Length: 492
Image (cartoon, rainbow, N blue to C red):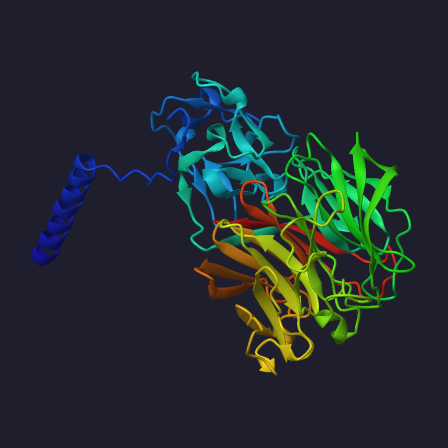
Protein backbone atom coordinates (compact mmCIF):
# COMPACT_ATOMS: atom_id res chain seq x y z
CA UNK A 1 0.00 0.00 0.00
CA UNK A 2 2.89 2.34 0.73
CA UNK A 3 4.27 1.68 -2.83
CA UNK A 4 0.85 2.56 -4.37
CA UNK A 5 0.72 5.75 -2.37
CA UNK A 6 4.18 6.74 -3.51
CA UNK A 7 3.24 6.00 -7.18
CA UNK A 8 0.18 8.21 -6.93
CA UNK A 9 2.25 10.96 -5.38
CA UNK A 10 4.82 10.82 -8.18
CA UNK A 11 2.06 10.97 -10.79
CA UNK A 12 0.53 13.95 -9.08
CA UNK A 13 3.85 15.76 -8.92
CA UNK A 14 4.52 15.08 -12.64
CA UNK A 15 1.06 16.28 -13.57
CA UNK A 16 1.56 19.47 -11.62
CA UNK A 17 4.92 19.98 -13.29
CA UNK A 18 3.39 19.54 -16.75
CA UNK A 19 0.63 22.01 -15.96
CA UNK A 20 3.13 24.54 -14.70
CA UNK A 21 5.22 24.15 -17.86
CA UNK A 22 2.15 24.59 -20.04
CA UNK A 23 1.29 27.73 -18.14
CA UNK A 24 4.82 29.05 -18.54
CA UNK A 25 5.05 28.12 -22.25
CA UNK A 26 1.69 28.44 -24.02
CA UNK A 27 1.05 26.43 -27.22
CA UNK A 28 2.89 27.65 -30.31
CA UNK A 29 0.66 29.76 -32.54
CA UNK A 30 -0.38 28.29 -35.91
CA UNK A 31 2.22 29.03 -38.61
CA UNK A 32 1.35 32.05 -40.70
CA UNK A 33 0.83 31.46 -44.42
CA UNK A 34 1.87 33.71 -47.28
CA UNK A 35 3.89 36.86 -47.66
CA UNK A 36 3.53 40.40 -48.91
CA UNK A 37 2.94 41.21 -52.57
CA UNK A 38 4.40 44.63 -53.31
CA UNK A 39 3.65 47.05 -56.10
CA UNK A 40 6.88 47.61 -58.01
CA UNK A 41 5.74 51.14 -58.79
CA UNK A 42 5.04 52.29 -55.22
CA UNK A 43 6.57 49.73 -52.85
CA UNK A 44 3.21 49.48 -51.10
CA UNK A 45 1.49 46.16 -50.45
CA UNK A 46 -1.53 44.47 -51.95
CA UNK A 47 -4.05 44.84 -49.13
CA UNK A 48 -7.65 43.78 -48.50
CA UNK A 49 -9.15 47.17 -47.72
CA UNK A 50 -10.02 47.72 -44.07
CA UNK A 51 -8.98 44.12 -43.31
CA UNK A 52 -12.52 43.21 -44.32
CA UNK A 53 -13.51 39.57 -44.62
CA UNK A 54 -16.80 40.36 -46.31
CA UNK A 55 -17.42 38.60 -49.59
CA UNK A 56 -16.47 40.95 -52.40
CA UNK A 57 -14.21 43.18 -50.30
CA UNK A 58 -11.86 44.91 -52.69
CA UNK A 59 -8.10 45.20 -52.69
CA UNK A 60 -5.99 48.34 -52.55
CA UNK A 61 -2.36 49.37 -52.21
CA UNK A 62 -1.41 50.30 -48.65
CA UNK A 63 1.79 50.73 -46.60
CA UNK A 64 3.12 47.30 -45.67
CA UNK A 65 2.42 46.16 -42.10
CA UNK A 66 2.53 42.34 -42.26
CA UNK A 67 -1.08 41.78 -41.25
CA UNK A 68 -3.13 38.79 -42.38
CA UNK A 69 -4.88 40.96 -44.98
CA UNK A 70 -1.48 41.50 -46.68
CA UNK A 71 -0.18 37.93 -46.62
CA UNK A 72 -0.76 36.21 -49.97
CA UNK A 73 -0.14 32.67 -51.17
CA UNK A 74 -0.32 31.73 -54.87
CA UNK A 75 -0.91 27.98 -54.80
CA UNK A 76 0.08 25.41 -57.40
CA UNK A 77 -3.61 25.22 -58.35
CA UNK A 78 -3.62 28.95 -59.10
CA UNK A 79 -5.53 30.22 -56.05
CA UNK A 80 -4.34 33.59 -54.72
CA UNK A 81 -5.13 33.07 -51.05
CA UNK A 82 -5.14 35.55 -48.18
CA UNK A 83 -6.01 35.52 -44.45
CA UNK A 84 -3.74 32.51 -43.89
CA UNK A 85 -5.30 30.69 -46.85
CA UNK A 86 -8.87 31.26 -45.63
CA UNK A 87 -10.11 33.34 -48.60
CA UNK A 88 -9.30 33.74 -52.31
CA UNK A 89 -9.02 36.76 -54.59
CA UNK A 90 -11.77 36.56 -57.21
CA UNK A 91 -12.23 38.38 -60.53
CA UNK A 92 -15.56 38.21 -62.31
CA UNK A 93 -15.86 41.49 -64.19
CA UNK A 94 -14.56 43.13 -67.32
CA UNK A 95 -11.43 45.22 -67.73
CA UNK A 96 -11.53 48.05 -65.19
CA UNK A 97 -13.52 46.16 -62.58
CA UNK A 98 -12.35 45.47 -59.02
CA UNK A 99 -11.61 41.93 -57.87
CA UNK A 100 -12.65 40.98 -54.37
CA UNK A 101 -12.07 38.29 -51.78
CA UNK A 102 -14.44 35.36 -51.32
CA UNK A 103 -14.50 31.88 -49.91
CA UNK A 104 -12.27 29.66 -52.03
CA UNK A 105 -14.39 27.59 -54.44
CA UNK A 106 -11.97 26.56 -57.22
CA UNK A 107 -13.87 28.65 -59.77
CA UNK A 108 -12.18 29.99 -62.90
CA UNK A 109 -12.34 33.55 -61.59
CA UNK A 110 -10.14 32.53 -58.65
CA UNK A 111 -7.28 31.22 -60.80
CA UNK A 112 -4.20 33.42 -61.19
CA UNK A 113 -0.69 33.05 -62.53
CA UNK A 114 2.53 34.98 -62.83
CA UNK A 115 3.24 36.50 -66.22
CA UNK A 116 6.13 38.37 -67.76
CA UNK A 117 7.10 41.78 -66.32
CA UNK A 118 6.16 40.35 -62.89
CA UNK A 119 2.46 40.67 -63.70
CA UNK A 120 -0.29 38.69 -61.98
CA UNK A 121 -2.89 37.47 -64.47
CA UNK A 122 -6.40 36.18 -63.91
CA UNK A 123 -6.67 32.99 -65.94
CA UNK A 124 -10.39 33.29 -66.66
CA UNK A 125 -10.27 36.83 -68.00
CA UNK A 126 -6.68 37.17 -69.18
CA UNK A 127 -6.56 40.52 -67.33
CA UNK A 128 -3.76 41.74 -65.07
CA UNK A 129 -3.82 43.13 -61.53
CA UNK A 130 -3.41 46.87 -62.05
CA UNK A 131 -3.04 49.84 -59.70
CA UNK A 132 -5.86 51.98 -61.07
CA UNK A 133 -4.69 54.94 -63.09
CA UNK A 134 -1.06 54.21 -62.13
CA UNK A 135 -1.75 56.30 -59.03
CA UNK A 136 0.74 56.28 -56.15
CA UNK A 137 -1.37 57.29 -53.17
CA UNK A 138 -2.24 54.90 -50.36
CA UNK A 139 -5.68 53.20 -50.65
CA UNK A 140 -5.70 53.43 -54.46
CA UNK A 141 -7.97 50.60 -55.69
CA UNK A 142 -6.44 47.63 -57.48
CA UNK A 143 -8.41 46.53 -60.55
CA UNK A 144 -8.10 43.98 -63.33
CA UNK A 145 -7.13 45.54 -66.64
CA UNK A 146 -5.81 44.48 -70.01
CA UNK A 147 -2.16 43.52 -69.67
CA UNK A 148 0.29 46.12 -70.97
CA UNK A 149 3.47 45.53 -68.97
CA UNK A 150 3.71 48.94 -67.31
CA UNK A 151 5.05 49.40 -63.77
CA UNK A 152 1.59 49.63 -62.22
CA UNK A 153 1.03 46.00 -63.26
CA UNK A 154 4.33 44.75 -61.83
CA UNK A 155 4.30 42.96 -58.46
CA UNK A 156 7.03 41.38 -56.36
CA UNK A 157 6.89 38.88 -53.53
CA UNK A 158 4.10 36.60 -52.45
CA UNK A 159 4.51 32.89 -51.94
CA UNK A 160 4.55 31.37 -55.42
CA UNK A 161 4.27 27.61 -55.77
CA UNK A 162 5.08 27.13 -59.45
CA UNK A 163 8.73 26.65 -60.36
CA UNK A 164 8.21 25.08 -63.79
CA UNK A 165 8.47 26.90 -67.11
CA UNK A 166 4.84 25.94 -67.83
CA UNK A 167 2.65 26.29 -64.75
CA UNK A 168 -0.76 25.14 -65.95
CA UNK A 169 -3.59 25.74 -68.39
CA UNK A 170 -7.24 26.79 -68.36
CA UNK A 171 -9.86 26.21 -71.07
CA UNK A 172 -11.33 29.67 -71.57
CA UNK A 173 -13.78 28.90 -74.39
CA UNK A 174 -15.01 26.24 -76.78
CA UNK A 175 -15.92 26.64 -80.44
CA UNK A 176 -17.90 24.50 -82.91
CA UNK A 177 -15.27 25.08 -85.62
CA UNK A 178 -11.47 24.93 -85.84
CA UNK A 179 -9.80 28.13 -84.56
CA UNK A 180 -6.87 28.43 -86.98
CA UNK A 181 -5.43 31.95 -87.10
CA UNK A 182 -5.44 34.03 -83.91
CA UNK A 183 -4.34 37.56 -83.02
CA UNK A 184 -4.67 39.70 -79.90
CA UNK A 185 -6.09 43.19 -80.43
CA UNK A 186 -4.75 46.19 -78.49
CA UNK A 187 -7.71 46.07 -76.08
CA UNK A 188 -6.94 42.47 -75.09
CA UNK A 189 -9.73 40.82 -77.08
CA UNK A 190 -8.93 38.14 -79.65
CA UNK A 191 -9.73 37.67 -83.30
CA UNK A 192 -9.62 34.10 -84.56
CA UNK A 193 -10.58 32.43 -87.81
CA UNK A 194 -13.03 29.55 -88.14
CA UNK A 195 -11.34 27.48 -90.82
CA UNK A 196 -14.32 25.57 -92.16
CA UNK A 197 -17.06 28.15 -91.46
CA UNK A 198 -14.92 30.88 -93.15
CA UNK A 199 -15.71 33.34 -90.37
CA UNK A 200 -13.67 35.59 -88.13
CA UNK A 201 -14.74 35.78 -84.49
CA UNK A 202 -14.00 38.36 -81.81
CA UNK A 203 -13.64 36.84 -78.35
CA UNK A 204 -13.33 38.63 -75.02
CA UNK A 205 -11.38 36.62 -72.42
CA UNK A 206 -12.67 39.06 -69.81
CA UNK A 207 -16.36 38.34 -70.39
CA UNK A 208 -16.41 35.14 -72.45
CA UNK A 209 -18.45 36.84 -75.17
CA UNK A 210 -18.02 35.80 -78.82
CA UNK A 211 -19.14 37.78 -81.85
CA UNK A 212 -18.84 36.86 -85.51
CA UNK A 213 -17.37 40.02 -87.01
CA UNK A 214 -17.44 38.87 -90.61
CA UNK A 215 -17.31 36.10 -93.19
CA UNK A 216 -14.38 36.17 -95.61
CA UNK A 217 -15.75 36.75 -99.14
CA UNK A 218 -14.92 34.01 -101.62
CA UNK A 219 -13.47 31.58 -99.09
CA UNK A 220 -14.12 27.87 -99.70
CA UNK A 221 -13.06 24.58 -98.15
CA UNK A 222 -11.08 21.83 -99.86
CA UNK A 223 -12.46 18.72 -98.18
CA UNK A 224 -9.28 18.69 -96.12
CA UNK A 225 -7.22 21.52 -94.67
CA UNK A 226 -8.12 24.53 -96.81
CA UNK A 227 -10.40 27.37 -95.74
CA UNK A 228 -9.79 30.51 -93.72
CA UNK A 229 -6.32 30.05 -92.27
CA UNK A 230 -3.82 32.56 -90.87
CA UNK A 231 -4.51 36.03 -89.49
CA UNK A 232 -2.13 38.89 -88.80
CA UNK A 233 -2.29 42.52 -87.69
CA UNK A 234 0.48 45.10 -87.90
CA UNK A 235 2.00 46.75 -84.84
CA UNK A 236 0.17 50.00 -85.63
CA UNK A 237 -3.23 48.32 -85.85
CA UNK A 238 -4.84 50.89 -83.52
CA UNK A 239 -4.04 53.58 -86.10
CA UNK A 240 -4.41 51.50 -89.27
CA UNK A 241 -6.84 48.67 -88.48
CA UNK A 242 -6.41 46.13 -91.28
CA UNK A 243 -6.81 42.41 -90.62
CA UNK A 244 -4.64 40.31 -92.93
CA UNK A 245 -5.94 36.87 -93.82
CA UNK A 246 -4.80 33.90 -95.89
CA UNK A 247 -7.61 31.78 -97.30
CA UNK A 248 -8.54 29.26 -99.96
CA UNK A 249 -10.65 30.42 -102.90
CA UNK A 250 -12.25 28.33 -105.63
CA UNK A 251 -9.09 28.62 -107.72
CA UNK A 252 -6.13 29.19 -105.40
CA UNK A 253 -4.85 30.24 -101.99
CA UNK A 254 -4.55 33.97 -101.56
CA UNK A 255 -3.67 36.75 -99.13
CA UNK A 256 -6.00 39.69 -98.54
CA UNK A 257 -6.68 42.38 -96.01
CA UNK A 258 -9.99 43.62 -94.63
CA UNK A 259 -10.66 46.83 -92.71
CA UNK A 260 -11.83 46.38 -89.12
CA UNK A 261 -14.31 49.06 -88.14
CA UNK A 262 -16.19 49.18 -84.87
CA UNK A 263 -16.93 45.56 -84.13
CA UNK A 264 -17.17 44.32 -87.71
CA UNK A 265 -15.03 43.50 -90.69
CA UNK A 266 -15.91 45.81 -93.55
CA UNK A 267 -15.90 43.06 -96.17
CA UNK A 268 -16.58 45.58 -98.92
CA UNK A 269 -13.15 47.05 -98.16
CA UNK A 270 -11.32 43.77 -98.85
CA UNK A 271 -8.14 44.18 -100.88
CA UNK A 272 -6.59 41.09 -102.46
CA UNK A 273 -2.82 41.34 -102.06
CA UNK A 274 -1.57 38.10 -103.62
CA UNK A 275 -3.19 35.38 -105.74
CA UNK A 276 -1.96 32.32 -107.61
CA UNK A 277 -0.73 30.25 -104.67
CA UNK A 278 -1.74 26.74 -105.69
CA UNK A 279 -4.33 25.02 -103.52
CA UNK A 280 -4.99 21.37 -102.79
CA UNK A 281 -6.84 19.21 -100.28
CA UNK A 282 -3.79 19.37 -98.01
CA UNK A 283 -0.44 21.20 -97.88
CA UNK A 284 -1.79 24.73 -98.07
CA UNK A 285 0.50 26.22 -95.40
CA UNK A 286 -1.31 29.33 -94.23
CA UNK A 287 0.51 31.17 -91.44
CA UNK A 288 0.98 34.96 -91.55
CA UNK A 289 3.38 37.01 -89.43
CA UNK A 290 4.55 40.61 -89.51
CA UNK A 291 8.28 40.97 -89.03
CA UNK A 292 10.19 43.66 -87.16
CA UNK A 293 10.95 45.14 -90.61
CA UNK A 294 7.24 45.84 -91.08
CA UNK A 295 6.94 43.27 -93.86
CA UNK A 296 4.36 40.48 -94.00
CA UNK A 297 5.72 36.93 -94.09
CA UNK A 298 3.56 34.13 -95.50
CA UNK A 299 4.04 30.35 -95.25
CA UNK A 300 2.80 28.30 -98.22
CA UNK A 301 2.60 24.54 -98.67
CA UNK A 302 3.74 22.59 -101.72
CA UNK A 303 0.11 21.79 -102.71
CA UNK A 304 0.95 18.04 -102.68
CA UNK A 305 3.61 18.52 -105.37
CA UNK A 306 7.13 18.47 -103.94
CA UNK A 307 8.61 19.89 -107.13
CA UNK A 308 6.85 23.20 -106.41
CA UNK A 309 9.07 23.69 -103.37
CA UNK A 310 12.17 24.02 -105.58
CA UNK A 311 10.63 26.22 -108.30
CA UNK A 312 11.78 29.84 -108.21
CA UNK A 313 9.85 31.04 -111.27
CA UNK A 314 6.71 30.11 -113.16
CA UNK A 315 3.65 28.12 -112.12
CA UNK A 316 3.91 26.71 -108.61
CA UNK A 317 6.81 28.97 -107.64
CA UNK A 318 4.76 30.55 -104.84
CA UNK A 319 4.32 27.15 -103.18
CA UNK A 320 6.54 25.44 -100.64
CA UNK A 321 7.94 28.82 -99.64
CA UNK A 322 8.20 31.54 -97.09
CA UNK A 323 7.07 34.68 -98.93
CA UNK A 324 7.79 38.29 -97.99
CA UNK A 325 5.62 41.22 -99.06
CA UNK A 326 4.73 44.77 -98.14
CA UNK A 327 1.50 45.41 -96.31
CA UNK A 328 -0.07 46.57 -99.58
CA UNK A 329 1.02 43.49 -101.52
CA UNK A 330 4.19 44.78 -103.13
CA UNK A 331 7.54 43.03 -103.57
CA UNK A 332 9.96 44.60 -101.07
CA UNK A 333 13.50 45.63 -101.83
CA UNK A 334 15.92 43.02 -100.58
CA UNK A 335 14.00 39.91 -101.56
CA UNK A 336 16.68 37.51 -102.88
CA UNK A 337 15.09 36.56 -106.22
CA UNK A 338 13.35 39.86 -107.02
CA UNK A 339 9.96 38.24 -106.42
CA UNK A 340 7.97 37.29 -103.32
CA UNK A 341 10.20 34.34 -102.36
CA UNK A 342 12.21 34.71 -99.15
CA UNK A 343 13.15 31.02 -98.64
CA UNK A 344 12.25 27.78 -100.39
CA UNK A 345 12.40 23.99 -100.18
CA UNK A 346 9.52 23.74 -97.69
CA UNK A 347 6.89 21.00 -97.57
CA UNK A 348 4.04 22.39 -95.47
CA UNK A 349 5.17 25.16 -93.12
CA UNK A 350 2.56 26.39 -90.65
CA UNK A 351 4.50 28.10 -87.87
CA UNK A 352 6.28 31.48 -88.05
CA UNK A 353 7.70 33.68 -85.28
CA UNK A 354 10.49 36.19 -84.79
CA UNK A 355 12.90 36.08 -81.86
CA UNK A 356 14.36 39.01 -79.92
CA UNK A 357 17.20 39.29 -82.44
CA UNK A 358 14.74 39.70 -85.33
CA UNK A 359 15.40 36.20 -86.70
CA UNK A 360 12.57 34.17 -88.23
CA UNK A 361 11.86 30.65 -86.92
CA UNK A 362 9.59 28.28 -88.84
CA UNK A 363 7.73 25.05 -88.06
CA UNK A 364 7.21 22.54 -90.86
CA UNK A 365 5.29 19.29 -91.32
CA UNK A 366 7.42 16.37 -92.46
CA UNK A 367 6.16 13.51 -94.61
CA UNK A 368 6.42 10.27 -92.63
CA UNK A 369 9.80 10.56 -90.91
CA UNK A 370 10.59 13.97 -89.39
CA UNK A 371 9.05 17.34 -88.65
CA UNK A 372 11.37 20.35 -88.62
CA UNK A 373 11.97 23.54 -86.69
CA UNK A 374 14.02 25.82 -88.94
CA UNK A 375 15.85 29.11 -88.56
CA UNK A 376 15.06 30.93 -91.79
CA UNK A 377 17.70 32.86 -93.70
CA UNK A 378 17.26 35.03 -96.75
CA UNK A 379 17.34 32.92 -99.93
CA UNK A 380 17.85 29.67 -98.04
CA UNK A 381 16.98 26.25 -99.51
CA UNK A 382 15.59 23.91 -96.84
CA UNK A 383 15.75 20.80 -98.96
CA UNK A 384 12.26 19.46 -99.65
CA UNK A 385 11.56 17.16 -101.47
CA UNK A 386 15.03 15.61 -101.66
CA UNK A 387 15.60 16.02 -97.94
CA UNK A 388 13.18 15.46 -95.04
CA UNK A 389 14.61 16.58 -91.74
CA UNK A 390 18.08 15.04 -91.75
CA UNK A 391 17.12 12.07 -93.97
CA UNK A 392 17.40 11.74 -97.74
CA UNK A 393 19.80 13.60 -100.00
CA UNK A 394 20.80 16.32 -97.56
CA UNK A 395 24.01 18.30 -97.23
CA UNK A 396 25.75 20.69 -99.55
CA UNK A 397 24.00 24.05 -99.71
CA UNK A 398 20.79 22.71 -98.16
CA UNK A 399 20.09 24.18 -94.73
CA UNK A 400 19.60 21.65 -91.93
CA UNK A 401 16.83 22.05 -89.34
CA UNK A 402 17.58 23.22 -85.83
CA UNK A 403 15.34 20.54 -84.37
CA UNK A 404 13.55 17.46 -85.69
CA UNK A 405 10.70 15.42 -84.24
CA UNK A 406 9.38 12.00 -85.26
CA UNK A 407 6.10 12.57 -87.07
CA UNK A 408 4.33 10.24 -84.61
CA UNK A 409 5.19 12.71 -81.84
CA UNK A 410 5.01 15.76 -84.07
CA UNK A 411 2.97 16.84 -87.10
CA UNK A 412 3.34 20.28 -85.57
CA UNK A 413 1.64 23.43 -86.82
CA UNK A 414 1.85 26.62 -84.77
CA UNK A 415 5.00 28.21 -83.35
CA UNK A 416 5.50 31.25 -81.15
CA UNK A 417 8.31 32.76 -79.09
CA UNK A 418 8.04 34.19 -75.58
CA UNK A 419 11.22 35.57 -74.09
CA UNK A 420 13.98 33.18 -75.06
CA UNK A 421 11.72 30.15 -75.49
CA UNK A 422 10.13 28.59 -78.57
CA UNK A 423 6.71 26.93 -78.21
CA UNK A 424 5.46 24.47 -80.84
CA UNK A 425 1.88 23.11 -81.04
CA UNK A 426 1.51 19.60 -82.48
CA UNK A 427 -1.50 17.92 -84.08
CA UNK A 428 -0.75 14.22 -84.45
CA UNK A 429 1.69 14.38 -81.53
CA UNK A 430 -0.99 15.96 -79.29
CA UNK A 431 1.53 17.96 -77.28
CA UNK A 432 3.21 21.31 -76.79
CA UNK A 433 6.99 21.48 -77.12
CA UNK A 434 9.10 24.10 -75.39
CA UNK A 435 12.74 24.72 -76.29
CA UNK A 436 15.23 27.43 -75.44
CA UNK A 437 17.11 29.54 -77.96
CA UNK A 438 20.86 29.29 -77.45
CA UNK A 439 22.77 31.10 -80.17
CA UNK A 440 21.34 29.61 -83.34
CA UNK A 441 20.28 26.35 -81.65
CA UNK A 442 17.12 25.10 -79.97
CA UNK A 443 18.07 23.30 -76.75
CA UNK A 444 16.54 21.88 -73.55
CA UNK A 445 13.40 20.75 -75.36
CA UNK A 446 10.56 19.60 -73.10
CA UNK A 447 7.00 18.51 -73.82
CA UNK A 448 3.73 19.36 -72.08
CA UNK A 449 0.03 18.38 -72.16
CA UNK A 450 0.75 15.10 -73.99
CA UNK A 451 -2.70 13.79 -74.94
CA UNK A 452 -4.45 16.19 -72.55
CA UNK A 453 -6.34 18.24 -75.14
CA UNK A 454 -5.90 16.12 -78.26
CA UNK A 455 -4.54 17.69 -81.46
CA UNK A 456 -3.13 21.21 -81.11
CA UNK A 457 -3.11 23.72 -83.98
CA UNK A 458 -2.16 27.24 -82.99
CA UNK A 459 -0.02 28.73 -80.23
CA UNK A 460 0.36 32.48 -79.81
CA UNK A 461 1.74 34.82 -77.19
CA UNK A 462 -0.91 36.15 -74.81
CA UNK A 463 -0.85 39.50 -72.98
CA UNK A 464 1.37 39.31 -69.93
CA UNK A 465 3.73 36.82 -71.55
CA UNK A 466 1.60 33.67 -71.38
CA UNK A 467 0.17 31.62 -74.27
CA UNK A 468 -3.03 31.12 -76.21
CA UNK A 469 -3.44 27.57 -77.51
CA UNK A 470 -6.13 26.08 -79.78
CA UNK A 471 -7.17 22.53 -80.61
CA UNK A 472 -7.85 20.97 -84.00
CA UNK A 473 -9.60 17.67 -83.30
CA UNK A 474 -12.18 17.86 -86.10
CA UNK A 475 -10.84 16.43 -89.37
CA UNK A 476 -13.80 16.30 -91.78
CA UNK A 477 -13.83 19.89 -93.15
CA UNK A 478 -17.53 20.25 -92.28
CA UNK A 479 -18.25 23.60 -90.60
CA UNK A 480 -19.55 23.94 -87.06
CA UNK A 481 -19.71 20.26 -86.12
CA UNK A 482 -16.91 20.10 -83.58
CA UNK A 483 -16.08 21.15 -80.03
CA UNK A 484 -12.67 22.79 -80.14
CA UNK A 485 -10.97 24.54 -77.25
CA UNK A 486 -9.26 27.87 -76.69
CA UNK A 487 -6.80 27.48 -73.85
CA UNK A 488 -4.75 29.90 -71.80
CA UNK A 489 -1.37 28.46 -70.80
CA UNK A 490 0.27 30.01 -67.76
CA UNK A 491 4.02 30.46 -67.89
CA UNK A 492 6.34 31.07 -64.99
